[in-house]
Amino acid sequence: MPEAQLGGAGGATRRWSEPPRTTTEGEPDVRPTPSKYQLALMIWLAVFPTLVVLNLTLGRVLGDLNVVPRTFVLATVAVPIVIYGLMPHLHRLRARLLRSH
Image (cartoon, rainbow, N blue to C red; front, side):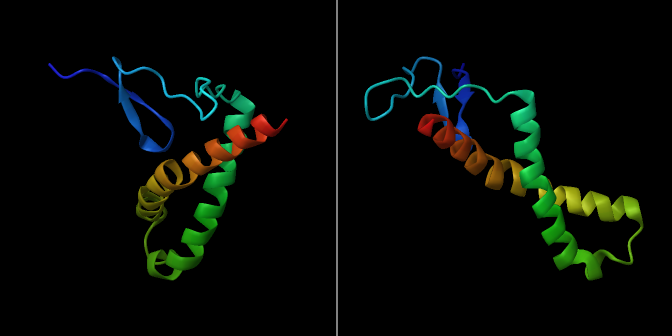
């Protein structure tokens, strides 16, 4: 039976049996969980520009579709961009900002 894996920032995984990763200074790489307000802001910062760009680029192509299929296509394209492309960068940016203060 395979061991369960822990998810990490940017899609990195580690096994339960592995020790936690450390920073270059030897301290554990522990990032505090964002508050619900920080997470809401991060999601908004990722979703809004993504939807604007998708609407500008795909608007003419999808313009003839009804609202439900058009929304389905936009969501199907936007969600992976936000989750796998933008959110890991925003989490790292947040961690850098927290370390600098």
